[in-house]
Image (cartoon, rainbow, N blue to C red; front, side):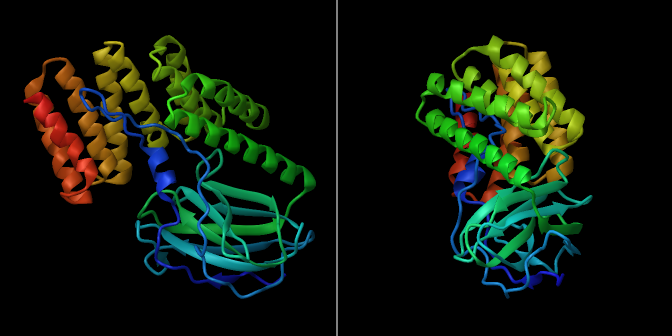
Length: 358
């Protein structure tokens, strides 16, 4: 079959503010610690995200379109620093399509845009992190675009996009995944409203669905465990939260590796729990590991590094290690100001912490 054609993309972020906020949820206490959460909930669609592509033939049951390319400085670059390449194909209403993005060089992120300009599907990655997959029945006849993207800004390298017909069973499973994501969104809304008890049964249901579909050791299961653990944590139910955090960490480390950002995120969550329990030695060890991973993967100037420095300083402050805490708060402040600008609201965090420390 003819290959899907390249579609040019505008220089703007595909990740809406809600999605960004779910990666780093701020919890301001008297000490103004901020905890990292792994709440990867459904992303909000954006209209006119991708340009109108040139209509080409759609995948058939007999053949698959395979495109090999790379994301680098020759690709479109979004405002948030992500590289992205777009490919167009023609589709028919009801047609079952499977799109895959695989790379050994970066954390895969795949999008699909409908003929009316809305993003109808996106996947941050499947179990191995380097592979993102979208399966769905096309809602209308017309010209679609798949976008090859990265989960983290600045990532680059070779990749392969495959577009092929999907089976009825694959579409049914994808619909189950979508239902689990809808439950996640309801959990997030209840969490924002402070209705933690009401959110727990929905989080448990989403976790059970993912365990049934994916098995007990998939990173998406680990993410559901993190969400459920957070609901227990914010209610002070640390004994219920701890085994969930520990299990999710074991899954992340086994599947994504000890040096993956999601592993670091989970370490930070567990460290915050141990800090609350007064287990300062274990909390410090986990935060130092998280800091090392983020520094290596995201770079020393990334705001996430500033956040972990802030949390580590908060831990030292709890122990009366004020000199060490001051030094880390100042480093966190400098990183935030450099990365976000002096007037960014997040800069208020280390400023407030320094004031409390003094």
